[in-house]
Length: 443
Image 1: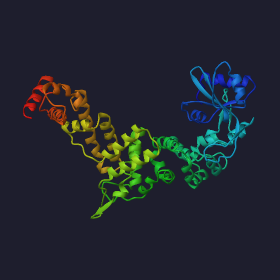
Image 2: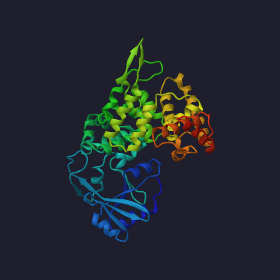
Image 3: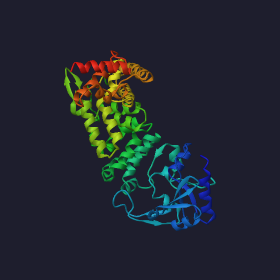
Image 4: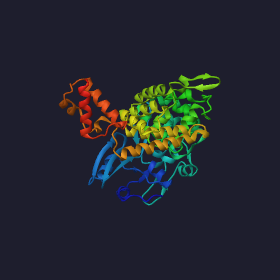
């Protein structure tokens, strides 16, 4: 059990000193019981919202969700959400209760919560209230709904994807009855906003158990991203591969660094394969699959309302992932010129993940990626020139030499950069101006 921060102890103690029950509950308790440091703390109490406000009248209080019984109290620099015990009414939108009723019963409050592991409460003295066997489920690494799973998922359909996400992040299995309800109710996810789906998806694919969960729960993920479903069981008929497209994808995700852009790129990098499949002499081919995968990824990430940077970067990586980069300074400089160092190094990581998801006899190709990385690092450390903005002259210099403000000026700069990258010209102002002047005289 993690030691409670002083701010949390203060909040719990003040509520109790004023005659109210108070506990930390939810993810902070779960993480604490797992030996992890909680990211934040949620407090539940028998005090009504206005009573909580009176208890903390000396502190800054924000009416975060007063309608649902939540106020935020700022103690020191720590914001603490304090929510009154409540009973939820019907959930007509499969997301939020139509109304809530406050109660004095901690049991009634915990009975409305999603999973047993999130329904364990602890007070400032370490006393535990566990009405639903949450501690036992945490010890056994099980995700189990509180009460009837169909009812829990009907109340808030996002819980379906949260169960799958927790399975990936925590490495827990989903208890059989809850798991059956996850599959039974998966289509309710269509009632959930794109932003919520996107948030859970990123956490899921960045989880330590992403490979297993993607394979085991693809039908659930596919309820909101149907574009992924054709990969399931799709035999690649190619000696480079030992997995079908879905398992290959899951292994690639698992081998990519757990960063959202890279894992999204890995998730969608081969999504276009089933649409580009052809077979010749028994060997499967997927001509143009990178472009098709990028197109599909762009559609899905736009639909899920990912920010532009995430979407555009993931799509670019997918589009580039199947291309070859020659092992030379010239080729690496050209790539850096067309794209950026950030894209280059991220692409190497995606390519490595893709390669490690292929047949083991081809894993040695990662050595080529290692050498490319060394070449790029060396180019950058020497501050070698690979873009026009790095040239020691610019467009204004060419105008002063007598170039017209026309496409020929841009073409001249491109030609100068080409000569510098090829090692034919030194990136030194005098040498560049002399070469530019010679070009002008030949126009």
